[in-house]
Length: 332
Length: 99
Length: 92
Image (cartoon, rainbow over all chains, first blue to last red; front, side):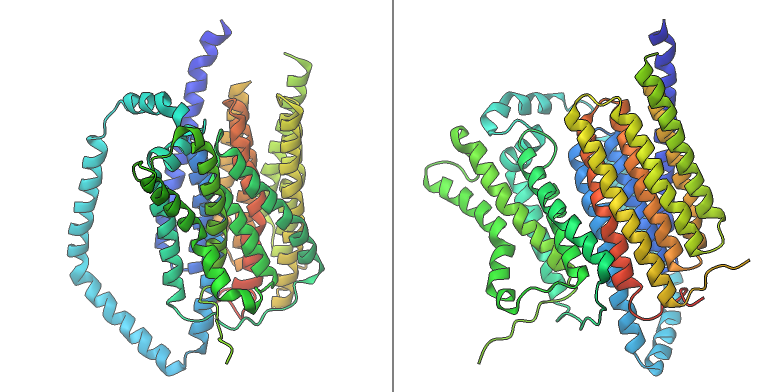
């Protein structure tokens, strides 16, 4: 009897929760884009990341929720705040004349905007209709794919289907994602050297916090790496937590020794990608296809690749945080 | 209803009350320092009560440990961050609110 | 019991959305950052409740990440965004 009455109520409550969550997400996305104050936009973006992670929780996709919680809500917020600090420092150093010039340019842009508004609308409409088409033509039943994955799960070497797909069946997904991250770092490095930091001493509270939190973050990163083979987790989740530890170190004022900034740093940055590609290439010479892991060693191979990837992803994320290329002075 | 479920309900309701109080404080209090005060109540006590309530329903001791670890993390960072923000606000020259 | 967990999570979501008013209103950058801190804790509680309501213990790891990384954003704010010179609306 109780089940009869409580079931529709549960569905109703879920519907209410999801509706509120969905509308809040849309509103936050709009406000974060439309806000004239950049700092306010960043805080709204952090809130957006938190709600997005809850959305992934509701969609029962814990792997994505973990990545979103770490990268979307945690690291991106800190990255944007640091970028804003650098932007403002640059703006302040500009002369008043340049500022006037800039204002004049901006009003020019506003006039242009009304003319190009129609074009923008046309492009956006095309994009939206393309997306709508893609959603409408999506196959409703992906049951066959699920069956295919669960049938082959045993030969993949891991028992978490998401890891099996991302590291084995569709390994190039992860491979390309890691290259994207590396490219992003190259983009940041193209902006030039690191701005001279003029920061104060961290003080006792921040010192204590970092000393407690950084070891914990490193342990949790290892936990996500290890647990990834049979539960949600993996290289990206572990890597982003490791990256958070690096970011915290940089914020407290720790700097990499100049000896390691050159070649050693670059080797670690490409280490994950290197191990991934060389594992795939070596298998070709052993008479298999590109990225076709033999089932007997697949589990060990995936763990090796993920460990290397976790390290590289973590260091890359922390290096992104430097907002510039670390100076590498050659000894004369 | 089981006794443990009864306690869970009480603890979760109390936790939710602290979150409500924290939000009301965040919206109604006059300056940064008083808002910080309201906020840390929600962080420390509100989440603490929630975690306690949920720990009663946890399926294993390991899960209870994880819940408490989560609470300790929030406790540590919220207390330190409250200090850091208040200190930064003081250095910026934001005057505490005086009646 | 599941409905109760979900209702509390719904209530927390409502308080989070109410807190957004402070983000929009300001007036100082610190006020906005405080709101973000509260959102982080609310999200932790919300995810823990959802994990209990739908009996998915795995989801607690999401809450663990929220809890661990909550400090990183706030420290970036104190050490970078608010440390260097005046922010436009912080000089009140």
